[in-house]
Amino acid sequence: MMHLTKIQEAAENLNGVSVHTPLVKNENLSEQFAAQVYLKREDLQPVRSYKLRGAYHKISSLSENERKSGVVCASAGNHAQGVAFACRKLNIKAVIYMPITTPAQKIKQVKLFGKENVEVVLKGDTFDDAYNEALLFSNENKAVFVHPFDDEWVIAGQGTVGLEIIEDTRNKIDFLFFPIGGGGLAAGVISVFKHLSPETQLIGVEPQGAASMKTSLENGKNTALTDIDKFVDGAAVKRVGDKTFEICQHSLDDIVLVSEGKVCTTILNLYNEEAIVVEPAGP
Image 1 (tube, rainbow, N blue to C red):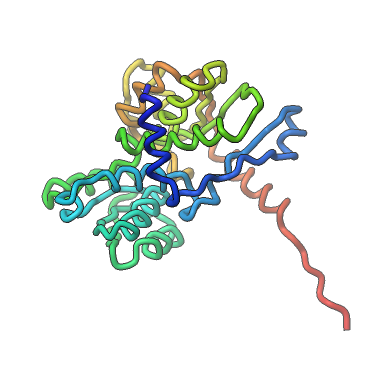
Image 2: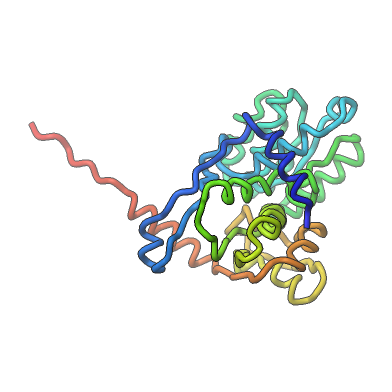
């Protein structure tokens, strides 16, 4: 596990940059499962995901010479937005590789957050394709590679999510569910909860078509998948991080898989539930 002090230092570094997002009880889910279900609203971050935490913490740690060389990263969207936001705030140049399949809205947001500090390059069909191109650029141009998950600074930044959850509830937390793509968030919050709430059951959630962490845990070693379903693009990676795998291997209690079809129907159901029909005004 990562030492708690590193995550607490990350929290101090992120003060005034990331938002201490609310932990909100969801009445519908609580009723459905006969439990007290709370959601950590990381969608309220400036870039609408927790990825800002790790990206900023990593980039702000760079030396003056490293900052002059600029940074490069690969991302399916959320990490890219976090890097873009951080680089504009810190006035550092970044080249961001994204898959060709990335939705136009995500590309637009990356450019919006980074402005003139960011160049977006579209390469390959998956995150892993973009990742390989970004590594090549890093080696050829001496730019600092900002890994989306397999980096201690990034893991510490993501771990601040766990610190805030502990801080914002006085109740005993029986289960904590969190998404797993490459494992950065998982490794960070696991490190927090094993120190501060060791009785909590820590459950990772992966898309069924990209179950790289579950496969690795079953094999007892970090295992790359040959093919993945790209539908859940933010969590669709062929291989998790070595650092994140090591932490999850020793401390993760379980992983549940969710089919891509279930993800799709749930999104549609939520959209239909929240839709508001406005009747036209009378004459």
